[in-house]
Image (cartoon, rainbow, N blue to C red; front, top):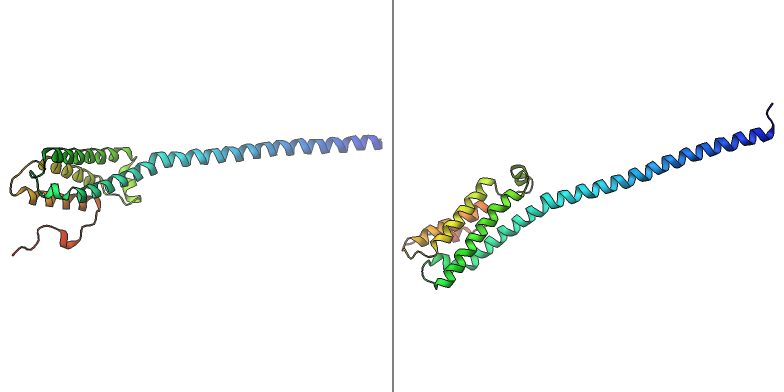
Amino acid sequence: MKTECDLLIMEIRSLLYSIRHHEVDMDFTVFFTVLSGVSIFVIGQLIVKLVLDPVHDLKKIIGQISHTLIERANIIANPGVPTREVMDETSNLLRKLSSQLHAHLYLIPTYDVTCRIFRLPSKEMLLAASTHLVGLSNSVYSADHNVYKTNARRVEAICDSLGIYIAEESRYPKEIK
């Protein structure tokens, strides 16, 4: 026969057992909550550092190219006319932008997929723009009377490749009568 004392002891043991198991469940719940939070943070940071930052940097380079083509338009359109120092500076800047554009292509993982997601120029367009920038870099020294036409076409090709807007009336060749 069980006495009241035995029943009370059994009830206390049962209560302690349920408390222990509840605490264990609670410890696992807290652990998994913290683990999932840390995992999401780490995955988020990986996405930011490996994908979003390089995409943002590429867009900044495209913006710098647009800025440079406008800022240096007088030198690009009149090759051989400015001082040697100005031509050197322009040539170096165009070549630097070309190399940065080329480098950013390889900083973005799986560029072929990423370019579609973020609406970036294709790999071929980026490489074409890079090539035309090098061509512009080389041609700022030439005083040939037809180089300005080639430079105008190169500027258009760069803008078209990178998605930089050019008004229709600013395109070459213009109707000259």
